[in-house]
Length: 301
Figure (tube, rainbow, N blue to C red):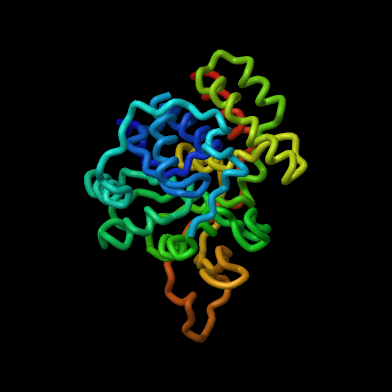
């Protein structure tokens, strides 16, 4: 008998690509979204919460130049009807993991502050949580905040190091993979022409995001970071991964750097790398299939 849909909590900083990932999740029969928790990143946390509520109804480095000042392409939507619950994000994560041991996947689309707080506040959390899929890191490629660091890890490097060394089942989906998944200008036109309510909504908010990519990367399209990480949680066959230890640099010029140790050499001396648990790091992605799933699920909404 099938176990039913996989329970996921999306920890998010909406954010245009976050909006897309949330919509894809809501349109994915394989998963049940049991909660959205919010964190700063693309916008400040209070606005991220407002945006998350709005989407579900329909140290701070803030990337409002990528996503627009309101985080959703400067559309300034009316206040959402939903209300955030009183419980904080870390408390919610701990509670859900203990209610459904081994059955909850956290898809972390922003800095890892909430997830690290959950790990630190409850020793049983790493055993109770099914998997933590992290959108973050730049493995063997340049970062996107600076050459060393990817934005989500850079947002809270200490938290990221806690998560990567926690012993939980962690899958990191870095920009080395997500930069292979591009939504082109013509894909956007298809969304705009479709009758999907999420598709139409995204077409409205994508303008700012497309302009940013045209300027920053000289591309005719946008990277689908968040939907790729989300779909890796929905359908693990979309990616392949390698396993090893990941540490995060927390100070200096390379603050936010994610370094992968493949365990091929046994080092004699005891170091910060010794006896650390392995994590999974995505190395390839079926980009055409990810794009196809994103398009289908948005158009059929």
